[in-house]
Length: 78
Image 1 (tube, rainbow, N blue to C red):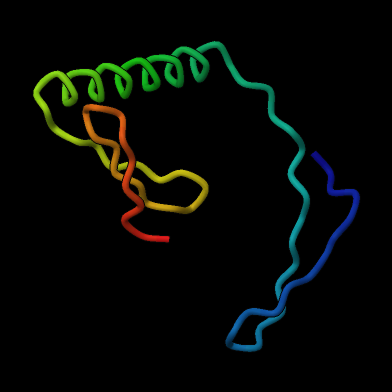
Image 2 (tube, one colour):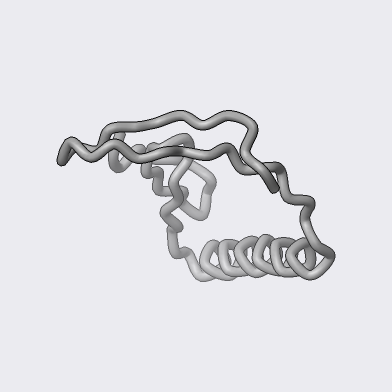
C-alpha cells in the first residue's frame, strides 16, 4: 500500500506530522461474523432490558439518549 497523497497536520504542541490516506480494506469473513454477532448481542441485551422494565442509554449522532421500555426517548446530553 503506497500513499498517493500526503497531508500534514499541526498538533497542539506545534509538532507537524504527516497524515497518509488509508486504502479501503475489504471486510474479512471473520470480521463480518464478529460484527453481526455483536449486533445480535446488542439487540438481545436491549430486548432483555426492556422486558424487565429497564431503560437503555445509547449514543445517536453524538447525542446521549435514554430509551425507555415504552420506546419513549429522553435526551440526556446534547
